[in-house]
Structure formats: C-alpha cells, structure tokens
Length: 400
Ligand code: ADP
Ligand code: MG
Image 1 (cartoon, rainbow, N blue to C red):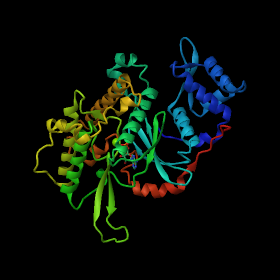
Image 2 (cartoon, rainbow, N blue to C red):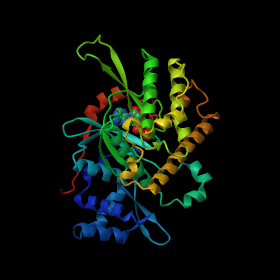
Image 3 (cartoon, rainbow, N blue to C red):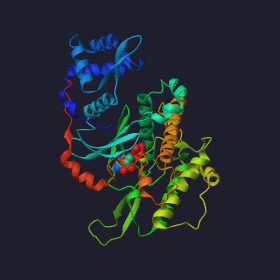
Image 4 (cartoon, helix red, strand yellow):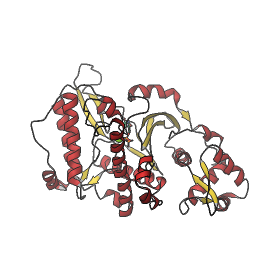
C-alpha cells in the first residue's frame, strides 16, 4: 500500500473530526456503526455535516463502508490510519512535508519526510497483519479467531516496540538512527545517509568490518538483546573520513543498525536459535560477497549468555515492558512476525521451486526478500537528491 497524501489538503476540519471518530470507534468495534460515528464526532465538536464528511472520507478511501448482517458501518483503512498519524506528526512539528518512498517491504513503507527547516527524516509506516492468500487458505480457522489481533493493532505494536528499542539503544550509545516520534503505526527517525550493506560491492578490509559487526552482536547480547534480523538490509554502512577536508585521509566504515520490531531477549526460549541465525547471516554474507571467512569459530550463544549484564551493562530487554508493552502485546506481535517470516519463506519456495535462499548467487532470488523495493535496488543516495524537490508540504485544515 502506498502512502498517498494528495487528498489530505482537501479534508476539512469536520472531516478530520469524523476520521478521528471512526478511529476511536474502532477501539471497540471491528466495524464502527454509523450512529456511533455520528455520536463521537458530535461530542467532539457540534452537530453538523457528519454524513457529508463520511461520504467525503469514503470517497478517497480513508474509511470503507462495510455491510454486515447485523448492521452497516465503517472501518478505517490503512490510508485513514496513515493520515491520522501524519496529522499528529505535523501538529507536533515533527513532519512538515512528505517526499518519496525509499523502501517498501511486505510489512512496511519507508518514506523520506522533512521538518520545517527542510531537514530530511525517515517515516517508517508499519504494515503488519496483511494476510496473504496462502495464509488464509492454510489457517482459516486460526485467523477467524484472531480478529482482535487486527492489522491496526499489530502494526501499532510493531511501531511502539521499534521506537522503544531505538530509544534505549541510542541512549546506550549504539549506532542506530535517532528516534524522533511515534504515532500509531508509524515512527519518525533521523535519515542515515548510508547505503545498506547489501549494496556494498567491496570493502578495503572485510575482516575489520566483520569483526565490528560481530562485536555489535556481542554488545547487544551483553545488554540482554538479540536483533533477530541482523542481515545486509538492516545494516547501513556509513563512510566516515578521518579528516573531512582531506579527500586522501582514511575512511572508516561504521555500521548503523536499523529495524527492531523483532528483537528478542537473551532469555527468550529460542534465544540460541535467533542468536545463531544472526551470526550465521553475517558469516554467509561475508563469504558470498567478500569471499571472507573468519578463522575464528563462533561466537557462541553459551559464551554470550555469560556476559549478559556484565561490567554494569544495563539490560535493555526489559525496556519494552517498562514502556507499558504488556506480555500479551509482546506475544501477539511475536506471533504475527513469526507468521510473516514463515510466509516469506513459503512464498520464496513457491515462486522458484527451490528452498529459500538456496540459490546463493542469484541476486534475483535474494531480491524477493521483503526489504526489496518494488522498483529495483534502492539507491538511497540518489533518491535523496531526487526527493528534495519532490517534497510536498502537508496541508492540514483541522481548524487548529
Ligand atoms: P522493514 O521492516 O520493511 O525491513 P527497515 O526498517 O529495515 O524496514 O527499512 C527498510 C529499508 O529502508 C532499509 O533496508 C533501508 O534501506 C531503508 N531505511 C530504513 N530506515 C532508514 C533510515 N533511518 N535511514 C536511511 N535508510 C533507512
Ligand atoms: Mg529491514
């Protein structure tokens, strides 16, 4: 789903109020009955053209009419939730304009946005819980019982969790983007002007970069965490020149870590599997891309486990719970993320008749990963230049 802000400028203050009313009504209703929308919208600001607003919102696809056996009503669409989130970011002055999309996965959209001063930022819109046809076919009964774990709820959980971890990691001095704001299923963070490792064809010293990445995995472990998706798409490689003025001064490569909704605790029942998988992912990539294989075996989970909390390392795995994220929320989100993983695996097997990632040098097969863009490889640097003119100011007529 693409974020389309075109209709935003045409919405009236009343339309925004009605859209908010539909969102509020969705807390208790899968389909919000029309009289309830009227009631909430009126409570919020005088009686008037609620119906006119409902039609206007439905026309641009921000809400959708649902005909149920018992009653008629409306449901918020992804677009509607996107608008509400953007509205909040704009009102809090975290986002002033929206540019182009730099990344799209099955479960997220990554947009370039800017603040009032024109500083570019990244808006990540989580889109969890979209159900593939295959999943529906295989899990019909399960899904019927999973109505409460709706896309809206799951996507919001992903954003809350990602924001909390980004904040905690940043405070602890980890190389991650700076988290700026979170609203509903979205987060705003600083733009890291660096390509993903995936796009790096060669590096001067693969051993040094490999060591740095392994030490990042171990440092996370010391703080009680496993990234859980430590792959070449989620590691951005920044080039820092020792002396900015001198083009001949040496360059250091600094990895910046992103994408945290799937992070797990070192105490997770499957921690060892996730830890090993993260390590394996880096080993495999370095061997394929840079023909580098470390002579040191490991690192091993059992050794990393012994370091948790050592040298006064603050445990960050408790952070999300501390932010009000209940055990039930964690469980719901985890189930959705595992389901997504299983799906992309199934789809990959389906589409090429081979095992997932078995075709090691086939870039195409890898490109089917959920992180890949819908229009070829992401050349972030180029896109950023392009979007500077393309940034569109958000116009919000909410009467505030
Ligand atoms: P997903 O959950 O869909 O994998 P990611 O957070 O990994 O989402 O982002 C997808 C892609 O968008 C990344 O691989 C990266 O290329 C780009 N990206 C995400 N966040 C940033 C950022 N803060 N700065 C620069 N690029 C980013
Ligand atoms: Mg990613």
